[in-house]
Structures are given as structure tokens and as C-alpha cells.
Image (cartoon, rainbow, N blue to C red; front, side, top):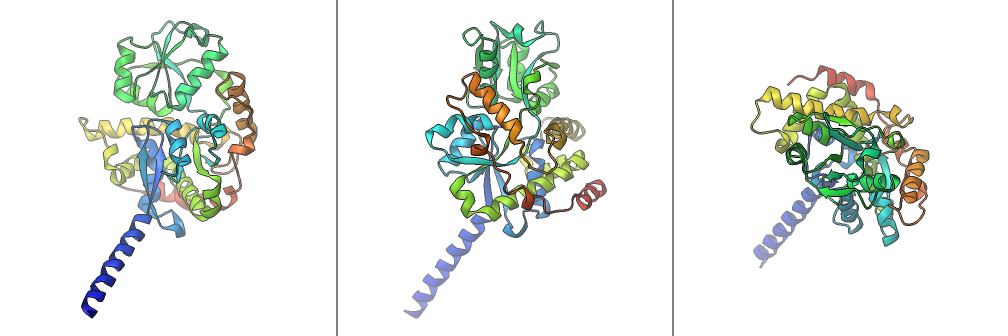
Length: 350
């Protein structure tokens, strides 16, 4: 009898240990089907154990776009994700009470690009054209809808889901669409695939913020320290990646091996991944939004964007920036010294 009790106790201990190990992995929604070198801050923080006392590793969950990222957090399938703000505003009236607690991309990563030789020169030239988006649940699709409404051309502009990367490049090259509403790293991937692009100027979007970490309000109240650890680790990884993009790309390969391209020699793969990373680095920079701290959100810029989305009926009711964005964690997230991280990055050798 004692041996049976001991066996049961041992089994329960193993199960308990297993549950602890499972909790050491934090699943975070990555709002694209393709995980690229732009994921480097997560990889770097995983590699160096920068998620602090919470001591977890991040597992990225690729999703079709920002809409799914918000929905998965709303249903509790994921605790955190990294979407753009548009679907957070769209889905708030349906009862999803969540906030961005860390703005990751201070510059607007979205925009309209066309082939370099395209006759399309201005946004007005998009009337009657076909715009390709990664998916109908992507932030780029919502941006395309807003642009079409702003032009008074919602009925004449077709928005078509064409996928990402090489698939999108092939459809654009084959004239299946006239323009793209994707984002910075996707445009870099398409150019890596051999399709030269040109961005259509859109001054209205320049100051609008892009993606940030979201969490449900009630979850944040219970897991504040974990959210701070996630934000701080990501911020530290960002500092490292900006200081040494090549090292960041290589560490990304080590931690997330599926991000290393196949069918290319290593030098080409590295060059392409650094280009992709540099496209994102431009939008990590704090001066894009006029903020001073990593993850800090400009409520003025968020409110301007929410008002723009309301004006062109992407949002159906007014939303205050303070309802979907908070800076309450930023002081704790920034409790680290970036100087040693920069030095570590510059000294890193493969």
C-alpha cells in the first residue's frame, strides 16, 4: 500500500513539475504568418535571460494579422500579443477590454507601396485600382479601407488578400494587384525577392503609431510583474538589435531556427535578414513619436489616429486613447541601463 501511495505521489510530483515547466514558456501572438528577423528582440531576450525574475522564454505564435491577435487575447487563448491599434478600437464595442501597455513600433509601419515603374504616383491614383493585403484580418486591410474612404473611393478600390513575402511579390509582379497595403518588413521581404518598390507619400500617416503589446485589463491587474518583464526584455532586446543588426539576425536564427531562409547561401540569407531588420529598426526609434522611453505611448498621436479612423468609419464610435493605451508600466519597464547592452552588442561575435 505504501509503495502505491509513493508511486502516486511521485506521479503527482512529475505532473506538477511539468506544469511549472509549461509556465516557463510564455506564448505571445505575433501578428503575421511569417516570423522574420523583426522578431529579434524576443530571440535576444530569450538567449540572454532578460525576462528577469519572471524567468520565462517567449514562444511566438504566428497569426494571420492584428485582428486575430486581438481576438486571441480577448478569448484568453493568449495572454499577450503585438497588434496594431485599429482592431483593438474596432473590437472594443464587442466587449474586449484590453490596453496597449508598450508601444513597440513608434513609427507607422504601414503604407501603400507600388512597383517602382508603376504609373501610380499619388493616393488619388489608386481610384479604380486593386490593393493587395496580407489577409483581410491584417492591420494593412484596415489601413487600406481608411485610405479608400478618405479618397471617397470605397466602392472603386478593391482590397484583395494576397498573402505575404514571395507570394505577394509574385502576385504584384504578375499584375494581379496594382498596389500593396502591407508594412515595413514585408516590403523588405518583397524587395529581397527581386521586386523593386516605391512608397506613395501619405503625410497623414507619418505620426500615427503602429503595434504594441496588449493585455486584457483584468489580466494586467493579476500579472503586472509579468507584463513588465515582457516589456523590459523586449526593450533590452531592441537596444541590442539596433546596436548590432547582424548579431541580432544570427541570434534570431539560433533561437528561432525556422526564421533562417532555405535555398539561399548563408551570406545572402544574412544580408536579406539584416535588410528586413533595418526596415523595422527605423520604426523602433523613439524620435518617430517624440517619446523618451522604450515602449512609451504618445496619447496625442494615438488619439489623432483613433479620430482619423472614426472619421473614415473604420471605427463606429468615438474612443479615447486612454481607454486603449496606458503608460502605467513604462517607468518599471525602463528600469535598466542601455549602455552595457550596447557594449555587449558591439562586442558580440558569432
